[in-house]
Amino acid sequence: MSNEEQVQEEVQEEVFANPEDLEFLGVNEFGRNEYLHKPSGITLVELPPVEGQAGVILMAKYPVTQSEWNFVMGNNPAYHKVSPMEIMASGQDLPVENVSWHDCVEFCKKIGMRLPSEQEWEFACRANTETTYHFGDDPKDLGDYAWYSENSDGRTHPVGLKKPNPWGLYDMHGNVWEWTSSPWSSTPPPRLKMAEEKEKTE
Image 1 (cartoon, rainbow, N blue to C red):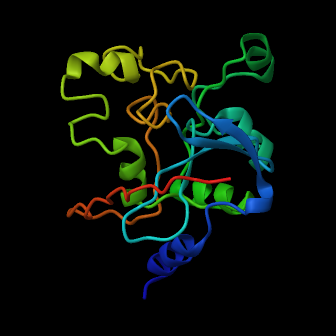
Image 2: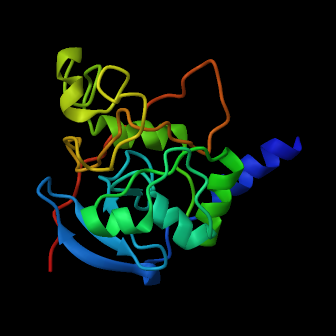
């Protein structure tokens, strides 16, 4: 096993979050539980169960912001920076970018979480849809959900300004590229399927 493969395997074994680090915030408008990850201040969304798999997948509601990254890592490597004063004045924060895969792995380890696999990320992005985009097939609607080459002016934009996907996750299309724990492959992995959810009882 190569060094890189060993790192990938170790990353996959990391848990998403320690339950003691989570504070239940309530149920969002899409019926998904949301939690505050107390060590980082990141809001997490609980995804539906995956067919054939045990456990819960928690995904960040927004891309990691510059203030969240700076709080954990003590630096802001972003090319398109926003100052703390600007964040306080506007209440809006830009996503962090200009970070390597290894940087992101280290960030996740520091807060007791891990990167999602490519399959998990696609499962979260698609939100149980079969269309080209999570909102449908018509690219004319992309501007309602994503910052991309046609509307971004060549820069990043504050997280959460566009419409979310059907599970309440923002910026899954556009704004910034997102790292996963999976190594690159020319063959896409099989898609994860949503399992039937059991009704929760008191």
